[in-house]
Length: 193
Image 1 (cartoon, rainbow, N blue to C red):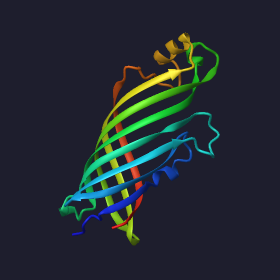
Image 2: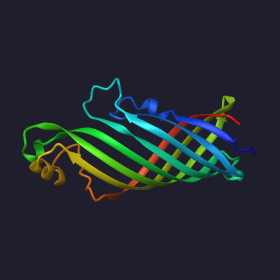
Image 3: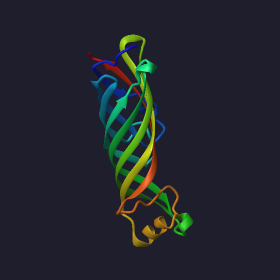
Image 4: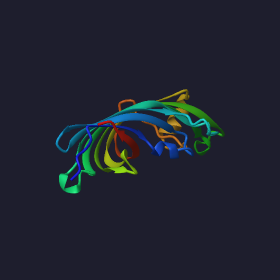
């Protein structure tokens, strides 16, 4: 059976494939072996507007993760289960179409959103190609507590958004609400020791 390295430095590979969306991100993190088959994993990242995108909609902000992972020894310590917490702060610009609400125009709307997530994780992390290079993928299901504020809209536009008549927007109450959430990520890493 293999043993997890003491420290792996990682970054997301999936974000490199995210070139067609209004949101791209970069992150850096580490996985540290705590005891036996348990590790502590954490990273920080930043959302940014893609340089190659022509879409007016975009998202900026940052996030941070921390997770506790358990690698069962019977699975060669490559598959793992875990529990992850994520904090995310986003500032977005969304193009809203008010035509369905009887207003003949579209408009750019600012959205500020703070979210706290908790996920149950399942993933796989193993060496590839060279002795110290790792590929790590994970998926998770959980819950999000989201607080969102729209700005730059008139009262009648706010009413149209809240009624669901505006394409491309979803109003988040300032008091916050709970939503189901999912998570997926692919990372590449390099073990230091």
